[in-house]
Every structure is written in structure tokens, then in C-alpha cells.
Length: 265
Length: 225
Image (cartoon, rainbow over all chains, first blue to last red; front, side, top):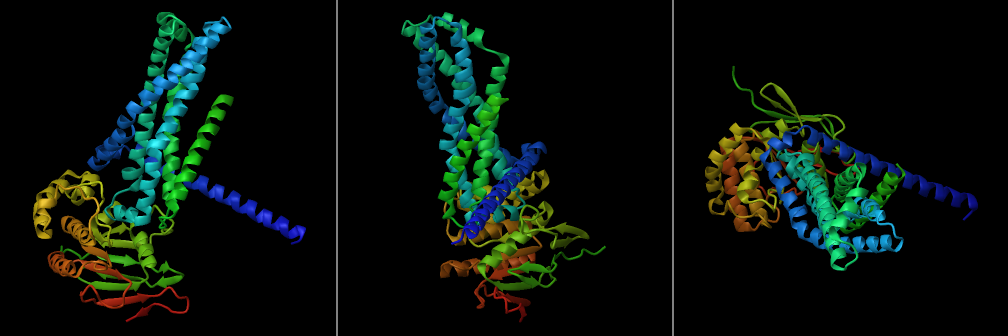
């Protein structure tokens, strides 16, 4: 094969890859647009069928995850807070405790752990469910009943992820800080009230807002990526595992990129 | 003013690089399309997925309903056109009652919901599922999917029904039972029927006014038999 032919092949490959990515982004934006439109119209609030699905999804995604999030917050929170306090004492600067807890635990660890947990626990189910619906032609069935998939299938899942995400992140932060503080005082590293004073001192309003925004948008956008991949299954059920793995990878990459962008901004 | 019958129209539909010439189905008429299952799905998508999919570039399917022009895929269109897709008559995570009432619970029109709830037991009795209404649907045989589709048509009182190979894969005794219920329903509603099938032999045992054969080969055109 000549050099020119090899160049042509590579150009073809790169061109096809760029086009595929472009189509994927366009499809994702369309999904986002139609789902946002369904949300903004607020007709879903008056539809009993949709509100039932929203409540069910909130229960599966949020309520059933609560115990796991608390367990993770106890373990991760205690470890993080303990290590931060020990480090702060070793450099003899206790003001670092509050600053580091807010920068690391509140802003970074909590939203990322919650979104990864939701991804593993509910995200895979979302892709599989929507993929099966596609493969079995249930989308046409629902449309034939005059039911919009954006309102009945996608919106409830996105809402459940967003609402559960923000609440679970908040719970994660509160539990981990409180338990971390108790753990420190139990280990005679720092008095509990002293610890709380340091945390309060190091807390800034913008950091709390950032935690809530991340807790809201990371799960929401993750859910949209999962739905998008589920919709790509088409009529071939063999595509389901392929789409599940690409959805999981997609969400992880998206969270890392968003986090990096957030850091730069 | 006399009521005008509903008519389902299509205009030069392109399926598998072939054009299905413009035509229509009136109430009481029975038309059969013989085509590959893939084409059936494409056609169903054209009827119901518009305007949400790539199948719908321009409004090529519509329903003339009481001097109104209802575009395919719209909520109004779906309310008037019944759809009986083979093995797609219910959602597994809902009860049979919720399945039957689903379009009305979604539409959020109190009057039609009340009417549907009023008619529900009568329809369930007709379908023979009165005792199972509160059971979770789960995995059900083709027969039950067919019954639920029939139930939707009866509750919506549709003027046009689009059905896809309903009897395929149904056990003989259930097929006979189902056929009786279908005939009764057609007698009650007198709808226009568009029957999609992949088989030339008439398994449905319905009499058709017109029959179209659409093949996917490039050299064979649509034949009107």
C-alpha cells in the first residue's frame, strides 16, 4: 500500500470519527432540548401518569440509595476528615481543616462520589431499560397512545437523577463532616466543637453554591448521556451491553471534563 | 349538518426506496398491506413517531376528522387512531387496569378519564380480564397484548385501527377466541382498518376491500391486487 493510500485511509478514518462525534453531540443536544421543553411547559405536573412515574423514579433513585450514601459518607467522610486534620496538625495550621474540607470534600469528593454511585446503581438500569424499549418497539407503542417519550420516559428519570443528586450530595456532606468530627474527637485528635468552628471558618458561600450546582447538574447531565445511549440501541438488542459500557465511560469522562472546566473557571 | 366519516390519508410514502402512491382509508373500509416486518415497523413509525424521528421529514400522513386535519404523531391523531402492534399492547411495570387507562391518565382530560373509568369494567368484561385488572402486567402472552390493544381501541372508540399481524404466534384456541372479539369490536366501532401483514395467506380471516403488496426488491413495484 502506497503512502498516499495510507494517508487517504487515515483521512477517511479521522473524517468518519469527527462526523460521528458531531452527530452524537447534535443528537444529545436535541434530546436535551426536547426534554427541557417538556419540563418547561409544566404539563407533566398535571398528568397523573407522568407524576406517578416521577414519584416511582425518585423512590428507586433517591430513597433506595439513601442508606448506601450514608454508609459511604461514614467511611469516606471519616477517612477524609481524619487525614485532613492529621495533616493540618502536622503543619501546625488548624485553619487548613476548614479550607481543605470545603475544597476537597464539599466541592469535589461529595458530588463525584454521588454521581458515580447513581451511575452504578441506577444508570446502568436506565440504559438497559430504554435500550430494551427501543429493541422491542415500545416507543412506537407509547407514541400510538399519544404519549410523548420525552415527557413520560426521559423527563421523570432526569428529574429523579437531578433531585436525588442534589439531596444525596447534601446528605453526604453533612453526614461525613459530622461523623468525621466525632471520629476526630473520639481519636483525641481534635475537640468536636473546635472542629466545627474550623469548618465554619473555612466555609465560603460560593463553595456551598458550587456543591449544590455540581450535585444538581452532574447527575442530570449523566442521566441525559445514559438516556441518549439507550436510544442508540435501535432494533438490535445485542447493542444493549455495548451501549451500557459506552454510557458508563461517557459519563465518567464527562464528569472529569466538567470538573476540570469548573476548576479552570 | 351530517357527520362526515373519518379518513386516514397518506401521500406518496417512500418505503424501501419505493413509493406508496397516495391513498386513503375511510371508516368501515378494510385495507391490507403485505410487506416485510421491517417495512411494517417503518410504516408504523411514519404514522406515530412524527414529528420526533427521522422518518418524518414532511407531514405525509394525516387524518381528516370532522373537518379537521390531524397530522400524524400528534396527540389528537393518536386519540382517533387505534394501534394494535403485535406483542406490544402493554407495559410490564403497570397493572392491567393502569395499562388500559394509560392514554387517559396521560392526556389529563378529566371528562374522558371519567368516561373511560366508567366504561372500563364493561370493556374488561368483554375482554374476559375482569378478575385480573389489578394484577401487574409483567410478561404476558401475545393473546393478552392483543386484548389490551383491543381494549384501548374500545375505550378510545377509534374511527381508524392500524393492526399489525395480530394472530402471528398466537395459539390456535386463543386465536379463535381473539378473532371472535375482534369481529365483535369491528361490529361495534365500524372503524377503517389498515392491516399490516408479512404473509400473503390471510391468517386474520378478515375480508379486505383492498390489498397492497409492497416488496423490498428494487425491480418489483407495488402491485395492486
